[in-house]
Image (cartoon, helix red, strand yellow):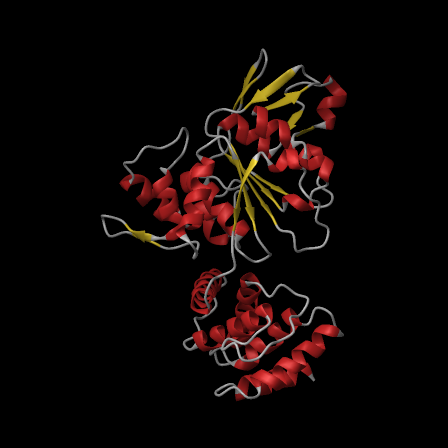
Length: 389
């Protein structure tokens, strides 16, 4: 890593990625990681895209903007290599996000919980920089040091402020190496800490006053942040910081079929990583879960005939994936391997009934007024009644 300062250049070597070394940076073998990084799981696709990509690439990008978009949206290359879609949604959204990263504007992915903001952020960083791990996880306790830099206090006490005592943040490392940094849940970070990013994003520099130096971002550096305004504990972005971002809103899936497709793909990926058997007829239960979530989320049945009360939860696509994955595990370990209504009923109840009083009433009304009368849903109705008793 090369750090440019006002009068000093310091270098250090970063650890190679799993794609290069065959192991993760903490020594874990690829097959042992519970949740491998995107650049590891889809290393073959990224390599195929790089080999076939003959379009101009911005400085230090692993792929051209066209290839990055193809990686996210899927497609078939000239050599018949199939690139699986990582994001199912409007193509223009992905194109705007990718081109933003090719400019000097940072990217803010905004949307309600469960709209794949983190997923898209990770895959963008993996495709652009080949490394999605330069990550700051935003919480109410995130400090300035997590965004700027910290200190090795043993070195600091022994020798005073020095380059050796400085602990660079993921953002500082990305600036020095011309890579993509990620900040998850930006609006959960306290407002005064958020504003630490203003100088980084506007001046492309990070001062180190203790050393009389600065880290200047090299070409290729950019930052992706994610945020939502639905959860509690949200800290609004200042107008000064918001101006430094190009905001892209990720919508909920436009149709039920699109959402079923997303849930099916992710459940299959997660199931394979957990060595769960595939459910032969699982798509029927997936479609039921998605239908329930969409109807309660929208406040109206799919046919538009019955208005419904919406519960307090978000009932997002991510929650639908969780419900189905848990149901698949139940079917595998305590059933016959076939995903059935009883396997998903408890998960749906837990997702819908967040407020034990108000949400339970909403759920019971939905069961009796909608589910009970729906053709082909009798087993599902009985299973939901059983777990709701």
